Length: 408
Image (cartoon, rainbow, N blue to C red; front, side, top):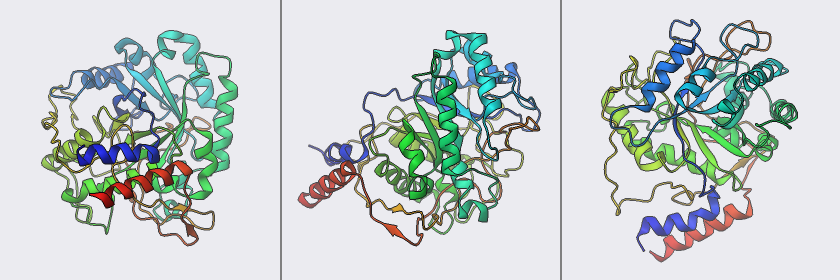
């Protein structure tokens, strides 16, 4: 048995990722354009059609992650991405914007109206719903330090999850898996465990590009990604992990040792996407085209929405003798996972997206994602009060992998 196969088999116990899940390929999509004007059906149609016919793609990118159910600059009108998804048969990871608000009434009203309007043509395409996006990170000490915007705490997010369940208890969405998207350091923060316990799946945003002070050159991106991703798998308690944002910018200013370039974006696509994620985990790449004018670095692989992207998307043939990589059945190597207790917040740099809340309909619920001043990505968890606390499955998996390594 090859090393990679041996490690992956043992690690399955630690990660507990569902082997039978469908591993969707998609991009993120906000509800506004780069000039902050609203996206309409034609704009979403252009995005979804382009994604499905990308030259050289390692599969069909026929899924989309939304940040909100609300049409930009409206109170609770359904987002026109819904009609575009129905027309293009694009699968949808719903987003309920939950930051900076004490209720999600407008989000639920917009989704309810869309279900009534489109019926099973829409609901059959919905693969999951995320209640919130990086709310816990924004509400952490680190998020506040990095001026990431107004978030929400675990009890608020938990309340929103219950609100969603009550609203759609007797509808076609009753059995759609519910998740929450956040940074890996938010998931290992013990304060947020009520959210982890309440969801069916875990969404993680991870950007090695923004890992300041950790050798974030493109040559080290794989190692940085693995550390964060394996940590998330280690606390997932057997729940599926979806990669909801990751990518490398093509243009913009350097970030510590990280340099945006087309060449580096392609290398990240190959090293992280091809070797670690695509067709192994549900993956929503950041991004097909950017929509956040405040972020100087640009991640879009096809800003003009051409089916021929800025770099070759072809995945290299896998090398069977290469070092173990994360697979659909678990993480590739053992690493002690620390669960941070409620006494401290993880001292990490940010990972993911921000936008403006829409509780009263004053502005779009979310423009597209990647952050401004602090940027998306996480660093090391070093909070005081950290203890090594694992699930039984995680300990068993880690022990097995360690034993296998000792025999080699």
